Image (cartoon, rainbow, N blue to C red):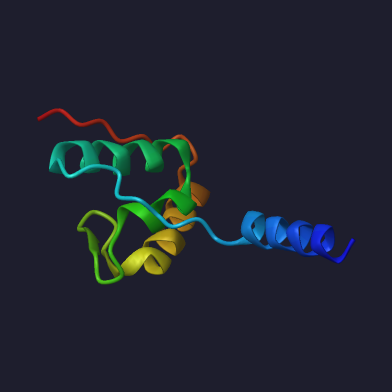
Length: 92
C-alpha cells in the first residue's frame, strides 16, 4: 500500500511541475509572427516563451520602451484597455 501511495504522490508532483518552455522556432520570421499573433489574441502569457528576460519592446507611437516579459505584459494590458480592437498585421 505504501508503494501505491508513493507512486500516486510522484504522479501528482510530476503533473504539478511547471512545464519547461520550448522555443517557438529558430526562424526569426516565425518568432515575429508568433509575437504578433500573441498580441492579436491578447495573450500576455505567451510573451514568457517569446521574449528573453532582457528582450526589449519599443513602441515609438506609444512612447514605450520595456525590457522583459513582465514590462511588455503590463504594456499590453494598457494598450488593450485603451484600444481593445488593437490588431497588428505584418506586411513585409
